[in-house]
Amino acid sequence: MSIQTDPVPSRIVDPAAEGTVRARIAWRGPVLYLGTALVALVFFGLLTPSSETTRFMVATRDDMVQIAPFAVPSQATALVLSVLALGLAAWATWLTVQRRRVRTWVPLTFGGLVLLAFLVWVMAGNSNALPLTVLLTGALTLSVPLIFGALSGVLCERSGIINIAIEGQLLGGAFLAVVVASLTDNPYAGLVAAPVAGALVGLVLVMFAVRYWIDQIIVGVVLNVLVIGVTNYLFSTVLTQNPERLNSPPRLPTLPIPVLSEIPVLGPVLFKHSLVVYLMYVAVAVLQVMVFRSRWGLRMRAVGEHPKAADTVGIKVNRTRVINTVLGGAVAGLGGAALVSAGLAFTKELTSGKGYIALAAMILGRWSPKGALAAALLFGFADSLRQVLNNLGSPVPSQFLSMLPYLATIFAVAGLVGRVRPPAAEGIPYTK
Image (tube, rainbow, N blue to C red; front, side):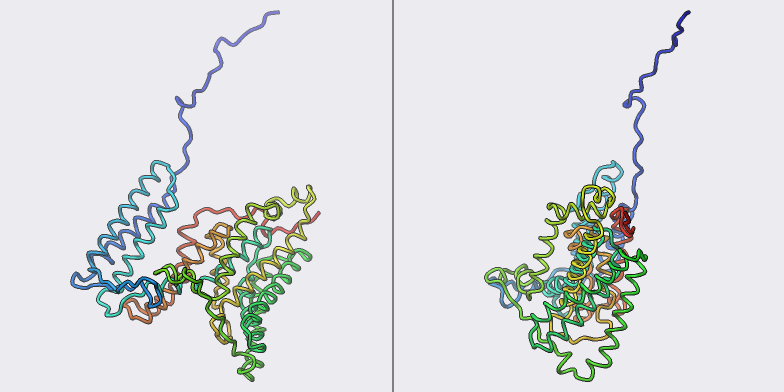
């Protein structure tokens, strides 16, 4: 018997010689950068009157160092800022073509340049100075309810429960905070009561999701409508009959941090707020560590990614989801208290869609506390800019300014998120 061998030796493939399959270039970022930079160059730079100036104010009377308001030439400043943004966009495009990573500071710097160019253009020739400190302080204050709502979404969805009911949790928290604070004449009592309302909404959501396996998105939408209906009814029948007793909450006092609150610009923006803002700082820091650096966070993420594997190692999947959803609802309720912390009376549909914006902030932040913080600050800044420009007067129509927060939400989610992956078991009931 003869053994035949293949006369042609096996071919050894050299990856360097054959080449490798390269990933497709994602053109979304370059197109967005270049398009935005060109619009800024044309509208904010070339179309700005050359004879106008723009005035800025960066200090308050309580700062330890006083900085006088200053003016800049509108067209020249807008042109410089727009050209810098265009150069940064071109560099980001070159990095994308070379399949190199675009660092996080690139879109942040690009957005800052375009924003400054817009502010120079919109305030050109205005006799009022743009108060940057007021603008930034308002951005932080207005973003606090969004941050709490986004943190609620992170807690729920990381464990596998889709929380569309953030709007209802914010609204319920605001309602109970106003009523309790008015009855006790103590704003801190309202701050304690608000998480209870949010937790109750979260409990109903998770019970229907875990026990009856009902579609979580449908339950969340129904809960939002239910809370809106209940609070509107109670407002029309109970609160309006005795507003002095039930709908006149005291204002949470401002607690400036000594020395730090007197630093120019940063002091009033970061360290001169009520207790609810400082609670937000603590909540973001604690949750960022707990979600990604603790055993509790590891178990929560395991339940949201692979509940069967989590159950195999002894983790109670449904119990974890119940606890996290109730906790997330309580956090969102605290955001409702932040909505009325300035002593605002309760009105119908007070939240005005902020729960859905918080949901978008959570997605834009990629289901992480620090990412949710950054995204919520973006939306809060858009809302603050609307208020400041409306007060100072601007060539932008007031209707467009009212659309700013929602336009920012749409463009951010559509243009900046790209491909994101939610927790794998999100919205899927777990059964043994």
